[in-house]
Every structure is written in C-alpha cells, then in structure tokens.
Image (cartoon, rainbow, N blue to C red; front, side):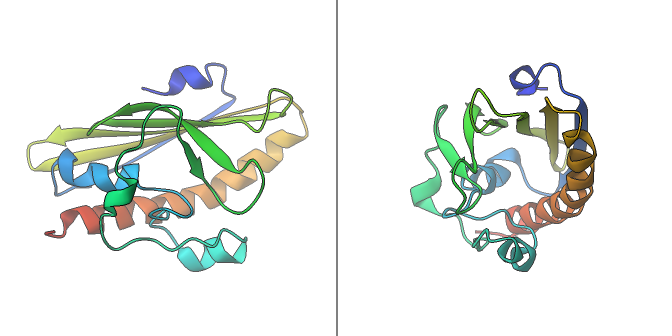
Length: 167
C-alpha cells in the first residue's frame, strides 16, 4: 500500500477498512483536515481529551485545512514531537504520513489512508505500520494497538457518517 515504504521493516502491520456510501471526493476533505488543532480525528473525543489531546472532531469541512501537501505536519496533541509528516498526498485517493520523533527515536510508525471508488461509493482502507528498536517496547506497542483498534473503528465510522451526509 502507499506509505508502506516509510517503515519497510515493520514488526507490526495493521490494516482496517470500511465501505462508505459516498464517492472518494466526499471522503477526502475529512481525511486531509485531520489532526489536533484541525478537524480532529472523528473518534471518541472524550477519550482523546483524557490523554491530553484537546481535540474536537469537526462536523463540517474546514476550508482552511484542505491544502495539505507533502512535508506538512499533522499534530496529535500538545506533546513535543507528537506529530506526523505527510509523505504522500494524492487527492482524493491517498494520504500517508510518518511519525518519528527523531533519528534517535526507538519507535517508528506510518499511517496510510487509501480511498478507492466502488460501485456505490468508496472503500476506505487504513494501514498502520510499527517498528521499534528496543525489545521492551514490543508489548507496549501491541497493547497500544488494542486501543488503536477501538479508536480507528470509531474514526472510520465518524468519517463515513460525515462523508455520507449531504453538504
């Protein structure tokens, strides 16, 4: 998938998907505006706030956040270095990003969103690829993936609900 090249030697790869009754052009605006201080993540805002993310999921397309390009960053919250860098922006089909705090970081992660047209709408596929350098981080990353599964499922539903509305 697009974005896989950012973390080619991933130790954990997770792919999730959802069908959406809207064309890719109506899904894309919700993806490109994701992020803290932008459109949010369309998940459980209250849970995100519990961990300090201070995000609020937008209920409308925000014109000021529609011009994302390769190299731009997407914030995940108030923490230093809690951001991803856009590595692929191919409207309306592919948004890929990579998170790595620094070259010395023991953790590397990519997040890709691929929107494909189907007969009646779109298929949104989300892939996360994880790599860690310290053996002790493996169980922590796998535990975080359980939370990610819950949040991503809600995020996919939130994107679908918004894209399927007439706007």
